[in-house]
Length: 308
Length: 216
Image (cartoon, rainbow over all chains, first blue to last red; front, side, top):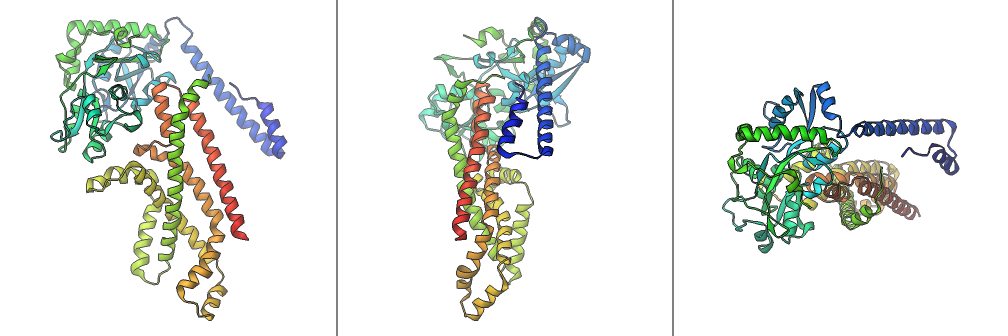
């Protein structure tokens, strides 16, 4: 992938015949590029060095793990005091402490950038309560889900269009919005909604705004995010949670933690601790402050949710 | 780094949609900024402070605040006051308004560069004011500033990706959406990068041709 230094300089000189100085600075810039490329390669190589990955050992040595979060209440966000919180980071704090990693460091990004950020080593784990689905399983590996979740809509007060699931949205020709990279895009398309007609907003707050200002009739998100975000609104409300239809079957989503595909060692260690927390009931105690209830506890596994 | 030809062909339908939106924004934004900039420039020459001060204040304000902030304001705050426009309309208006405050200065330079003798000749011939402007001053002024205006067209093209922030799916928006759905970043981003070069090069050729026509 290193750029062909000599050739490039040759073609340039044939076209433009640059002076010696510009040739030199061009070569220097190319050299710098090449060096950048080389360091990039070596970083990827270390991650693939050991069977099952050596990330856990490295994290223990550093004493800190970087968590990718998407700023979504209540899954993973920075609270009013500037502290990292949310169901996923809080759970990660407990589990990583038990694994011998004392501190967590948040890396906030957009939801759609979580998987690319994980792949490009910007953080070690995605702790954003990310739904486990087949598309994502092709890119990353997941822990078992720590919660299960239904979908819900944000609509204007009184639900004037009477929207209760994706079929209603299609039949009543409602204008539909959801977030970048959300699983809800696929659910709406499956119900027959034209993909190019979906308004893609950056997050659930922008979604609420779109509904309030009448740009769209409905914003789809998880039952929990939508419930939390409309608390601040006087002009919108949230509908009764429902199961979206996937491949003709009602489908329950589950969210977990994502790791790079090479780090199966870390993922397995994480799963072991997660299972202990589920068994002892501590999991619900950690998640309850964020609005989770018994209904959201699950015995589903990542394998079942990945499907195919 | 792997290059996946299928990803490129999968992306192309989205790419054309995005290109169309980018060109729409560019053409409409340019028209608005060229016309509105001329209006600002002419208003600023009126002898009344009641006009020049408000116009000066508004255009300075727009010129000195970031386009991205203006986009957010127009898209998220105006609806609070009951003014809701579609994302594309908002984007075109914002970019046109923003750049009109630049083109206004360009026109001003052009107008001031018309030699005083031209004004004096028009007065000597007893030309009415409107005729002086349309037949003597503006044709000379605008001819001088076409290269500078062309610059702003290129600059505007490169600012169109900002509209992604208000959910307009121009080229970068389409590329990002495609990347997030398919986890392929290299191909779509390369395609739109090349498209930006091609479009801006074509635009500059077009403007060069326009310049040449106007000289003769």
